[in-house]
Length: 87
Image (cartoon, rainbow, N blue to C red; front, side, top):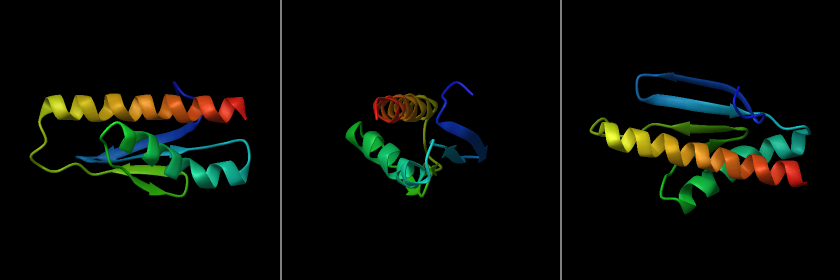
């Protein structure tokens, strides 16, 4: 994977999930919420579920909005990964 904290990325249609991993269990329990918070700062809402960030955009989403969604998600992953490496 491109990012060490991403253990798995999966999806079906417009539904998707980024499953993350951390070196210790406590950090892993918080990672979904951290990605959600980072995404929300940039205007994207994802659903945190323990160590996962789940997304389900509306059916009327445009291709440009899909690109923007994944750009924000990637920036959030980079931000969270950077904070985990520093700790």
